[in-house]
Image 1 (tube, rainbow, N blue to C red):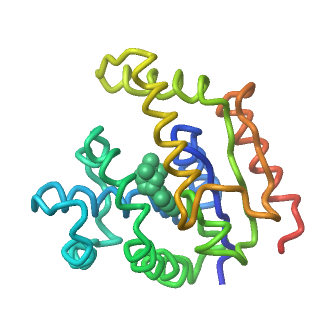
Image 2 (image 1 turned 60 degrees about the horizontal axis):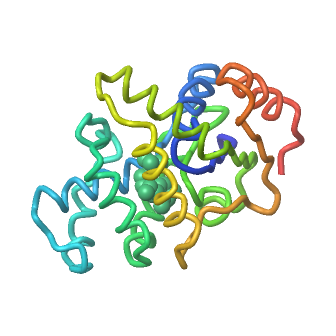
Length: 214
Ligand code: DC
């Protein structure tokens, strides 16, 4: 059975970039769990379902296809907002839990590692993950990185707008009653405020190769 690498952390800390790089290094499948919330949010927007209609929202979960999670539409600010709201619903989280737990069995049977990144992977989804990494960086630094990423994608946004959005999402992710963002008790904290992505990647590789697994 593949060893599970759980990577958690706040918005724009570099989780998906690092997960992708580690995935390439170890030929490990990766699940970006935020995409599940985003796909669901997009369905809700497309079907014009009201945000408090939990019953209809839950029905949309059947449209999620783990094999087909890629779409540029998933990264609009409307999807950012709706995914953040629905991620605070207990019923939604419970249903998506099964999707996430099925990932290693479905994709990792002949692999050494599987990677799952998100907010509650080391705490709730895989409390027995072999590696638990909690990425952190100051909100100011994350806002700068996000602004740069948006700029590269041709979207010009002011720093203060990005900084505000990051603070709003941090507050929502960290203060929600169900599965809030927090480091698992036995996770390794990697603060990337003063290091670049290459240094963070090297640190993660060292952690994975040198840590005695749980
Ligand atoms: O990582 P992301 O920005 O793509 O996540 C989108 C939203 O989903 C974000 O508001 C937080 C939420 N999310 C969550 O609550 N739990 C996860 N494991 C992953 C994402």
